[in-house]
Length: 183
Image: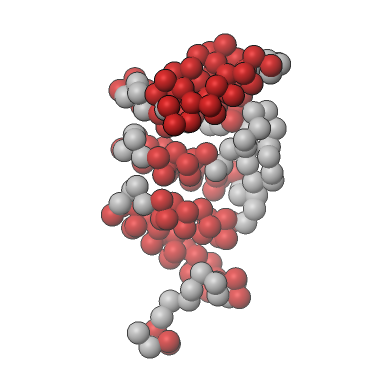
């Protein structure tokens, strides 16, 4: 394709000015949606979407943009419950620490919108061995201070996901030493 008809690369979007940049990023967001429509397990498309969302809205994301994107992810999780890429993308919006943000662009799991837990519970009702939903449920439960229930979920994960057994055992020990969250 001649250079004058090529789309700008991801490397050059940062040099664009105002409206041109926004228009380009919105088209890239739509393109990531097309890629996911074609193959929602495409981890690269989810990664591209992450970069575009943050380039478009900035860091930290405005609450409305975060909420809209989380709802977008939950729709995909409901549609394809065993899609690890969607769960990984969902996880990127929340902190690894249970009760405090890890950085300016994440929120604690305990502050997740109620739709996250509702969707996870629904997936687990229909797919009780879905490792990805079980992991999200464990993070939610742990962050809310229900350490015994979280420990039980980590036990289940250690039985389902033997490759990561040591990780889940470590999480079980973490539940034994954490101080429950206070309301």
